[in-house]
Amino acid sequence: MEEPTAVAGKAKGREIEKLQTEYREIEEKIDHMYEDKLAGAITESFWKGMYEKYQNRHSKILEQMEEHRQAGGNYLESANRILELAQKAYSLYVEQDSFEKRKLLDLLLSNSILRDGEIISELRKPFNILADGAEEEERQAAQNMGFEARNKIWLLR
Image (cartoon, rainbow, N blue to C red; front, top):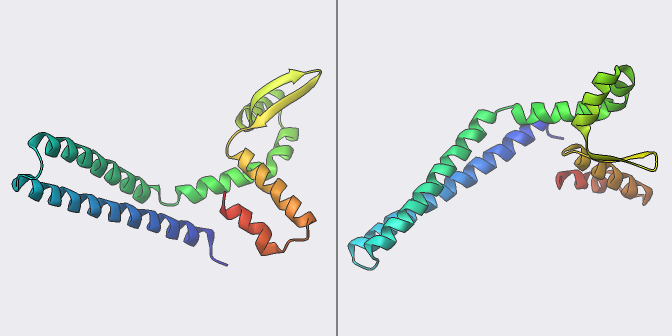
């Protein structure tokens, strides 16, 4: 099984490649459009409008590529911290004073209401995704689905 950092690195690399491909395609479109402008096949106003549109997309692609390059291990580090918090939430809650308990609940929950003496709330992202995945995995385990089949649900999340 591959290391999580290797998987994250490959995914990041694929995303950067996809952005580079789109960047090159836009450059080609600009070149062809410029040739059409010189040949008189398109108007000056059409050229300016499309050129501006393509240049804006170029800029956004460059920003996205830079974000991916700068992100480095931050994705994996954040994911690890979220998983660790999800695993330890109960024990952390039990050990804390009321102020810290409130902070933890604010981090994990949203839309909390008191109805008939019962607290009803929703988990915040990404904790709701983890809870839904765990619930689905339990359902599949009860149906005696194999380990690999059960774990495929996590790839979709």
